[in-house]
Image 1 (cartoon, helix red, strand yellow):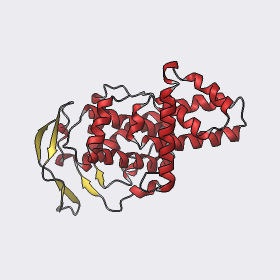
Image 2 (tube, rainbow, N blue to C red):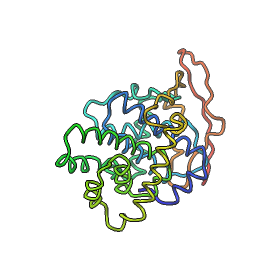
Image 3 (spheres, rainbow, N blue to C red):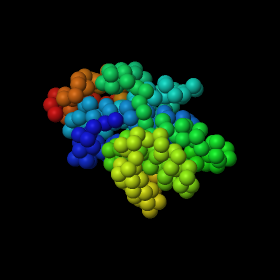
Image 4 (cartoon, rainbow, N blue to C red):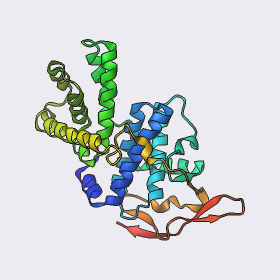
Length: 284
């Protein structure tokens, strides 16, 4: 889990918070396009959150966030998918198009930053356990429908930074409470949650998720309803190549490189769009 300082950072930095929101929308779009496992999406979100928490700085640019999102999803795909698409294919929906070698270098940056701890517990980690338990008292098609609805609720909650306050188990059980009407089954399933998390935290998390679902129903596009992921699609992409980007902007928890002049498009001799970058050090 991320710490309370991370939530404060996101609430005080609208740009990074918005980029995180768009990244999760893009993860949802990618999952539906390539039929990824739901666990792949939740792991990618976890990697993004933990990396940003470790490398907090006001010098983030949008292309940096896209590269981080892309590399995080690529890492998650390696652990959860048997037939992964190419690095070029999964970039559909991004404003920038990154060279494969640049993505792989960013993957290494993420892995080192996370201490190679990738098997994170996410709210989705509990879905399989919950459905397995319910399969003994419910018909298979009912359990499948319940699992699908639960995943949608958990995806919607991941878009709201406030949900990061709660443990994954509490988020999972709050989501189940939103979709399961059988109180007897619900009371049985809640025994999976640590006792110190079952009272006030479960109720407050459930109330938050109800608010999120109400917002999604009223304004699906603005609030990132998982049923409308295509709002993040971009038709034209800017190409970014390894030799034009210096990934030393990620040197640790306190130092980043700030892109001062942005990414400027120019036409190269080979007919491709290139990007010119300048970097100055920025200390958080």
